[in-house]
Structures are given as C-alpha cells and as structure tokens.
Image 1 (cartoon, rainbow, N blue to C red):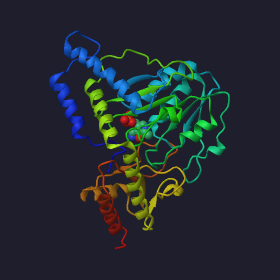
Image 2 (image 1 turned 180 degrees about the horizontal axis):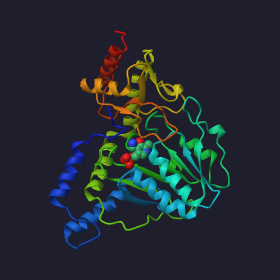
Image 3 (image 1 turned 180 degrees about the vertical axis):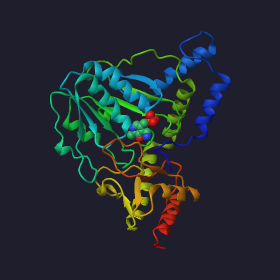
Image 4 (image 1 turned 90 degrees about the vertical axis):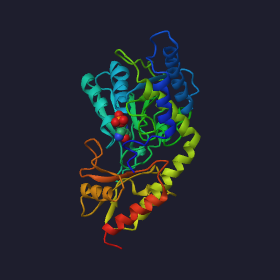
Length: 359
Ligand code: PMP
C-alpha cells in the first residue's frame, strides 16, 4: 500500500528485462553487431511506444529518457527554461507540492532574477483557479497531475483554459501508469515521469516535449550510455498497463481510495488530509486517485506506521518529501495500485478502528 513511493513489478516486466539481459544485452547507438543494433531499435521503439501510450499525434514531439521525474524536471528547468528567463519573469508552481517540482524552478529563478509564484490553493487544499492570474511575464506553469499526498487531480483542463498560451510542464509522477494521459487532450507542453511508480524498474523515466510553444527542448550535456534494461522494462510496463486497461486501473484505484476515506470518515479519531470535498467517489471536484493521507489525533504517524507494518500493512509515514508550504507534521499515506483489493482496505480499516478504540 505504498505505491506512490514505488510500485511492484509484474512478471511480464521482469521477464522482458531477464530476456533482454540474457539474450540481447548490448549498448545502444554503438557497435554494428546484431545485439547492438537490436538494442538501438528497442530504445527507438520504446520512444514510439511512449508516444502511443500518451496519445501523441503531433509528430513533432521529443522523447528523452531520464533516470526519473526528479532528473526530468531539473532538465526542463535547466536546459529549456533557464536560457529564456529574464529578471522579472514568472514561474507558477503548485502550492505544497513535492520538492522535486519546486527546487528546480526556484534554482532557475535564482540564477536569472525571475520569480516563483505559488498556484493558489484554498484552505481545503483544492486548487483555486478563480484566483489565478497569468500575466505577460508568466513563462511556465509547473503543474502536477496528481498530488503525492492529497491524491487530488489538478484539473489541467481548467488550467489550460485560463492560460492558453503559457507552456505547461506536467509532473506526471503519480498519474503516469495510473490513469490514461492524453497529451492531445490535456494540451500540455512537457510530461515528466518516473517508470518505477508505474510497474517498470527504478532508474528510468522520460521527458516528453511537445516542441510547439517556445523553443524546441534540447537536453544539455552528454547523454552517455542509456539505461537499456530500464527502458526495456518501461516498454514492457506500458504493454502490461495497456493490457490491463488504464481506465479500469483508474476506476479501481479511485474506488479503493473512496472506500478508505468513507471508512475513515466514520472514525472521529482520524483526520484525512487534503480537500474534504473530494473525499467521496461521487464528488464532482478534483477526485483523489487512490492516494489517501491521514493521521490519528493521538497516536503519532511514525508509531502508526510501525503498528500497521506489524499487521502486514505496508504504508508510508513521514512528511512525504513535501516542500516548505506542506503539512508541518507527518501523516500516514496509503496509496494503492491495480493489485490492491477491497479486502485489504477493509483489513486496514479494521486495524485502524481497533486503534481508535471504537470496536
Ligand atoms: N513528483 C511527484 C509528484 C512525486 O510523487 C515524486 C516521487 N515521490 C517525484 C516527483 C520524484 O520522483 P522520483 O523520486 O522518481 O524522481
């Protein structure tokens, strides 16, 4: 139940990696023998696979493999945004977001004299786009698709409607492989994600760049040898996720999350963090995607984490890499994926209820 940190790996992904490493391992873009050529092709195929996976029909996009979201966001900030920034320019970043989606933009601002402004949030942790002002100096909106603590969806459509011409960089760390992402539909300019939260191996991710608003994205530096096994795992993970059906996975995760929040709502000793309007499965506002953070009024979240682990319920309990404006005290975060079950949520609720002294 700690999938927002990293997912488990399906056998099909492990088999693809094992097969590649035992019967075709080589470096890409170097060498002329069959395994080397095949590896180069595999990487190219993975690029096309990713374009299909996120419904890219533009034909102008770039796909650059990275080690994950953190490196991807840094690369967009350093190699694409920074060279364009002038003193007084503005970057909008989500309030109380993951530090991986704050620090690179702050760094770019510090180096150029630009300013970072927080996307407005109301007290219940819902994005308050009515208060969003986008000006002529707004150079980038760093959006986050699904929040890693509150699980709410940022509603990129509304954001795009308010800022039709501003490039949007989407941190899809918690949405890639959890729900269908269509870049044709969302109209974003960058999608940055990690493979390891979406059934692939750790150490691989990608930056997809539309290359239509602003200059073409060209990652700086020297690329070196790619993470071939990681890229093979990512392609296999996308096959697995498509076979399972991202619509079904999204509904499944939401339903499990709603089952948990419904159960917690009946226990006054627990406080669920984030937007309260989006607790229920029927809520019209930005729904949670199977990520639920909560705390007990008396038992510390650290202790709660140990107690749950002793029951075989593996959750995360700390401050969740949240940047400065985030929660000041830690919480327990439950985050589900396709292989979690309603029975597991019920078992978790049973243990939590025992601790709340209600049963
Ligand atoms: N952004 C968000 C929203 C995340 O949840 C995470 C991972 N917790 C990251 C960025 C960073 O991802 P990674 O550690 O794989 O680089």
